Image (cartoon, rainbow, N blue to C red; front, top):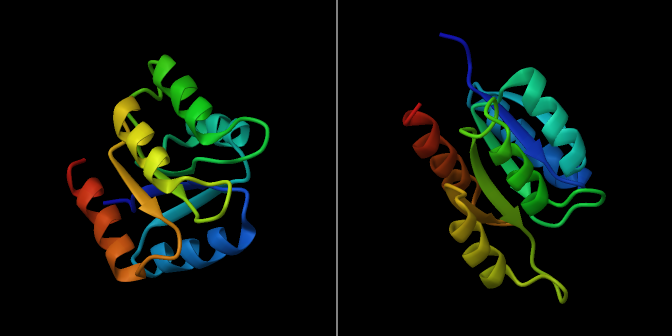
Length: 128
């Protein structure tokens, strides 16, 4: 069976690098996007099994990209885990509430335990 394809959409190269390596060690195929617009394009061509979508990105943010993916019959069923970081302008509790309200399968706060992160990814890919 082919490896699951995971798309990481985030504007922070350091985050992408750490999580991409972590997921590839687990045998996943990982593709990356630097913003929501690029993520939408990749989803149409590559059909990932799961998207790790940063809430706050330039051009098209994660929430807007998620809504656009839901409008397209070809991408509407792709599972999305929203991710966010801590900071003065960022409100993780509000982001998590919004993520659940609009239909994301889960939420991850950057900087958490990598084993827990992999467990969440595995949990949602097992359902495929």
